[in-house]
Length: 343
Image (cartoon, rainbow, N blue to C red; front, side, top):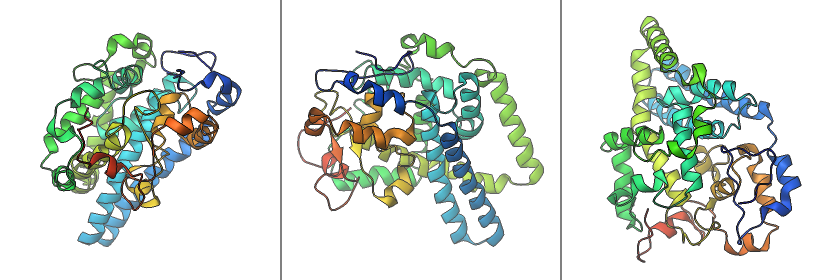
């Protein structure tokens, strides 16, 4: 593996294989790894502004349809917060690592019952050992019926409906525990530097307890417990699970899995898909795996740079949408009748 950004750390994984040589693009890539802190903070602020607006509208109009719409939008923004937390996991939110983790925990991870540091411990192992038995994401889903593909479309709809109707609530809770790094195979031994980085208050169990105690006190004092249950907790246990499943499927399922350019896929989501389950350029997942130090707002530019490489054009796995009229959709990859490509 040849590094193209100096200095590199264990937290930034760069893929340089016979299929693709990123070293030749080092100057352009180095520019793309530079943080524009205001872009990340603006994204966080906008997601929270939408969430607050949804609460206000639901409380203002007191109509069941407004509450349902607000809960749906909030569920999509909960996922958007997780996507931004993922950037923070790679220290792509703030330059100061301690404050990167503090901000990520307070505004992105804690609200959806995770921590940045624990997610980082298993996520870096996922990058180093993609789609192998040392990849914790792979091993946790391997052999589980809901994660075996291809499926019939009816089977896929059934799985998604079980997420949406809370039938898979316990599975969703286990997924949240797993992505927080507390399940088996977290890869703690793989990234001791990442485990120790950003310590202090952000990683403190006492700090997290204090955070939840203050939130609970504010909810009880304001009498907001019912809106919080219906507009925050319910989407987190239903819609969020379905959204996470759709995105995870799009990233790593139904792919050839032969080399670094087709072990994941990019998906050029339609506007409705980006609103519902693919915010913050998360569709450029293959490109993210090729260089994890590039923040989400620079991934489109990185993708355009990669398309100048002939091997990338020939071999990389690209889809036009999750579902749609195109011949290159995720849905067509995962609902064929061929031999299952499963995790």
